[in-house]
Every structure is written in structure tokens, then in C-alpha cells.
Length: 357
Image 1 (cartoon, one colour):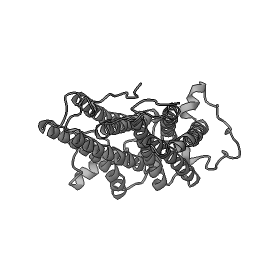
Image 2 (spheres, rainbow, N blue to C red):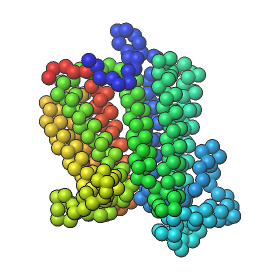
Image 3 (cartoon, rainbow, N blue to C red):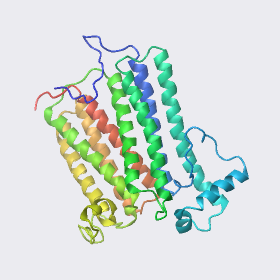
Image 4 (cartoon, rainbow, N blue to C red):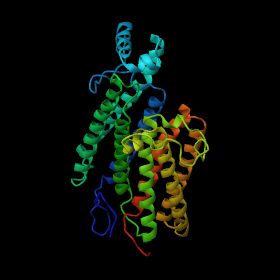
């Protein structure tokens, strides 16, 4: 059975490929690269505490920064009304506010540019006859998801304005981050399906291994979102033990117990470590089977997936030990998208289904 959760027309004997597939595929790869940069900007914005500096959501009119000192002062006065200013940046002057404003402004501007690049590219390709009828609904869906992501970004930011908060809700952060992963994955999946229309049959064990390890990797990424959301990476900065213990003290201290999975610093960090270690173990297991098939595209793709997971694990440990510096923290979040890209690439190589066991 072919593995293709989003079936696409393919070239071959049936001649079902559209002549514009290559152009559309390259365009989608460009949009996916822009999304990767967006994730990096989001990580830097979060780690520098810049995300709450703009308290207005203007998706259509907010293209330009303030041009007058009066407008700068108005925005600064708005920022000084939220709890983050009093608790974290009390005494900040207008010059300091401008420093955190620019990164959030760039983050939002880049999101708008992605929307323009997608819509402009889609209209151009449709008018040029490059988009097949079967593909168009998928591209429209992607654009709708991008619009939803913009709303989710504001939904996340707005949670940081609540009286009891100095940062955004970790739940909303994970939803926003998860949507970014979903959009990136769909962009890459559809692009590769257009650019590499001939699937390859792969060993069943390799196929199952890629899926299992990839799912573990995605769960680890989402767990990392909760680590970021409650700033759990700034505690227990030892490895492999957590302050001398395998399971940290206070793991299940919150009531009801389920809250520990999302709001307890020791539990959230431990769970992220555990999932990451399971993913690494799975990647090492996968690489043993992939090595036997290294002469095939699917084997090399599986090895690439295992390698990116190992690199991400090392990055995570370094980020923890150095107490989450902005550079390493941003790189760790961005490289999660690289791992996701390797997973989607491996899945694409397995579209032809299973061959031998």
C-alpha cells in the first residue's frame, strides 16, 4: 500500500503530472524556507522577552514602524500598562523599549511577507497555468492555515496582557508553534511530491521505523514548547541527572496531577528529556536498518533523519548546560524544523509503500 496521506498527481505511465509541477514545487520550497526563518525569529523574540512589546494587532495596516516620537511614546505607554513591564522591565526607558520593539516588529513583518509571497505566487502561478486543478484546493488550504497562524500568533501574545501574567500562556505558545510545524511540514510534503513524482518501494521495517521515530521527534518538539513556555530550561542545568537525581524532586507536586505534565518545571523538563532520549534511541535503532539500505534514496533519507536527531539532541544538551543563551536557544528551536524536514523527506521517499520486510 502506498504511504501518501495527502495524495498528489504523479508522473509516469499514466501521464498524470502537470507541466507546472516543478515551478510550483520550487515556489513551495521557498515558502517553506521563509517559514523556517520565521520560527527562528520567533525563538529569538521569545528568548529576548520582546514578544509583548507590540500591544496592537494590525494584520493589514501594521506594515510600518512608528515615524514620530509621539507615536513611539504612545506605544511605550501602552507597554507600561502590562504586568511584564512592572515585573521584568521596570525603569526601562524609551530607548530600551525600542530595542525589544524592533525584534517583534521584524517577526510580525516577516509573517506578513510570507503571506504576500504565498498569495502573490499562487495568483501568478494560477494565471500562468502552472497549477493543476487537483492541486489548487491544497494550496488554498495552506493559505487559510497561514491566515489562521497569524490569528493564533495574536491569540498567544494577547495572553501575556492578563493581569497575572508576565509572559504568554504556554498552552497558546505550543498551539502557535505546533501550527508552524504543521504548515512547514505540509509545504515540504506537497513540494517534494511535485518535484520527486516517482515513489520508491522501501523495506517495511525501515518504513515503520521512520514513522515511529518521526512521531517521537514531533512529540519531543511539542514538549519542548512547554519547556519554553514556562522557562523550564533555566533550572536543572545539569546532565544527565537533574540536580543529582534521575527523576527530579517535586515531579508530581501539582494538583490535579495532570497539571504537572504542562505547568511543573521539574516534570516538564524531565518529560522533554525523556522523550528526546527515547527519540535518540529510536534514531540509533533506525540507523542500523538504514545503513543496510544506504545505497537507496530511502536508506539515505532515514540515515539523514537519524543524524539530524542526534545533532538536535547534542544542541539541546548544550543549550541546557549553558543555561539557554539566546543564540543556542534560538538555534535549538530552529533546528527542530530541520529535524522535521528530514522526517518529511524520509516520508516522501517512502511514498511507494513497503517492499520486503
